[in-house]
Image 1 (cartoon, helix red, strand yellow):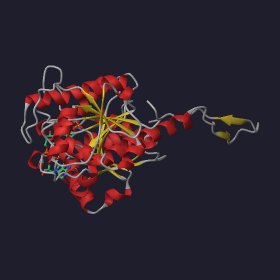
Image 2 (cartoon, rainbow, N blue to C red; image 1 turned 90 degrees about the horizontal axis):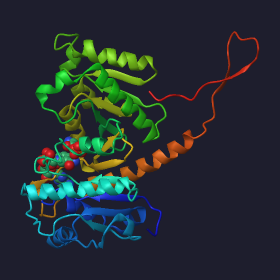
Image 3 (cartoon, helix red, strand yellow; image 1 turned 90 degrees about the vertical axis):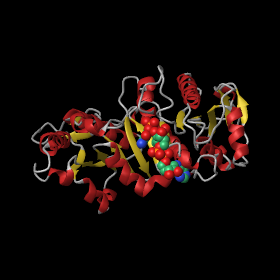
Image 4 (cartoon, protein in one colour; image 1 turned 120 degrees about the horizontal axis):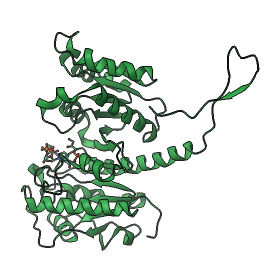
Length: 365
Ligand SMILES: NC(=O)C1=CN([C@@H]2O[C@H](COP(=O)(O)OP(=O)(O)OC[C@H]3O[C@@H](n4cnc5c(N)ncnc54)[C@H](O)[C@@H]3O)[C@@H](O)[C@H]2O)C=CC1
Ligand SMILES: NCC(=O)COP(=O)(O)O
């Protein structure tokens, strides 16, 4: 390795979707190569196929591992069977196998310290399923593989607009029974910590959405607000967290109230992601908070309807690279700031001794 730029490991995702298109378009800009050292985990053959089909100018080097990645170059580590064929827009278990192989290799090299962050191109969540990958998505898989026992939180973000989820990829029929006081508090704690450490916000303000229409209308339309969400918020607020709500989701988003908060915690996937994508999908980023590893992805999926046509925008993928780099740097800064912190000094009221007291280091909620 000839440089000390952040090494961004990129997994190829589903080879029949728009993954390679957005990756190659992003790194056709030489400025991106000054910002980081990108390493694609995938297939030089498949990358070349996409480049030719879409008439893209992006060049890359073939390497055996990220340890060989060259300065100012896009590199590709081959982790895919050369026999695999690209068939644009086709859901194909072979493509699923290729997506999984790339993810496995990236995780292996991350563990070896060869890459600093992981940016994933979209997978087809159905075709990737196998005995080795039985998860609803990257979030849950990476939580298990690289979480060291920590829990993940899915955050979709664009600039200061950040939406996180209490429940994720579960059937709608299971949402109400999955939303518990403990789960809300767990997600709030991860969100609060991430806003501080990953985004440098010292006292984050978090809005929490209700589960039922109109926040339950005092119990008329459901009791979860009264019995679960409000007690969860009250306890966290008593510990000093700046959390507010529950807000009725439709009016909260429609009125623009969300702009007054650093983060919005939604109760379920479509409650949070539908308004988010309506407002911010173009440059939206999916960030997996709460884990030791920094992992991002574009907000979009495989987009089979436009695969191979040259129509996919790379904006979201480019932002995913930026966010991964920013969070990585913010974490380093936060770690440095927390090493040997100055302790707060104060005099106790009603203590006549004039004795200076030192408090203990603040614990994260
Ligand atoms: N992180 C991941 O791996 C994710 C994977 N998926 C998977 O992707 C597949 C398709 O999911 P959908 O819900 O259809 O969402 P999608 O994001 O693939 O497509 C939704 C719409 O947005 C458009 N679109 C998506 N990306 C675009 C881009 N870069 N430029 C321009 N237009 C774009 C598509 O053409 C389509 O009309 C599913 O298998 C899903 O599970 C979905 C989201 C994230
Ligand atoms: N809708 C968001 C999404 O599907 C994210 O999936 P993944 O990042 O967990 O693979």
